[in-house]
Length: 278
Image (cartoon, rainbow, N blue to C red; front, side, top):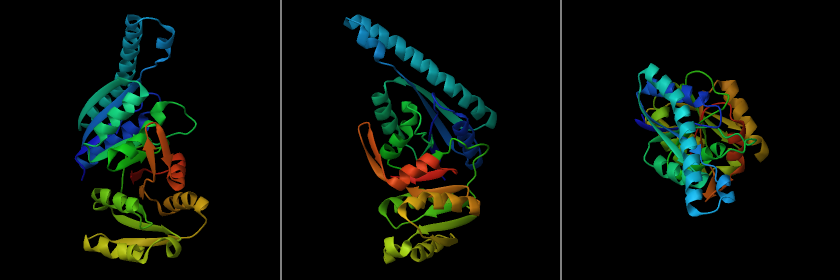
């Protein structure tokens, strides 16, 4: 199981799903959590000032205020972490969005797993954009918790979204610590005969999982591309799945993020925790 986990604690969005989910996961599996929160520095005030010293003073005030917001969010996390008796540390950051993306993205590469909150498209805060930046930059698995998530995290029944692609294979391998401890694994395919090469069929995946001592069943779905995401979420509800595993398609260029259609739809509407790898 992952032992070293990075948790992004929001400062401008609801943080209870992240706090409850990450702390309960750490308590269950004996993980160490490093919680990181970003207070965003507003640069707008600096544009109306004249002179280097004045600009520096405004930035310093903004950064101090940003740090206070980050510390306030981490206080909520720390209270729950102490109560649960888990190993943890906290790191507040005060930075402009571009600095935050670069810093958090680089930091994420050191961890076996990152835990973030599902983005909410209707919100304009950069706190809403950072989770997908972590997905693109981490180089490893990212566990997205839905903003409707409540209670303790569990991963007894896991759905593996399988299309035979490189990113799906990466997500599968990255999720192995969870898969090895699950009670039930379900391989989910969509239009397999049309889109999945025979070499990486669900049947062959089942055989390879079995060699690792993992028993799985396959559920094959069919439908138009626009129906893939709702079909998967409907299946997750019908099967009582605790978590989904899937590849995260897309790429990031500076602050422009381009997500694949199914990935974007899943991030917008997910109803169960979803582990993605890019």
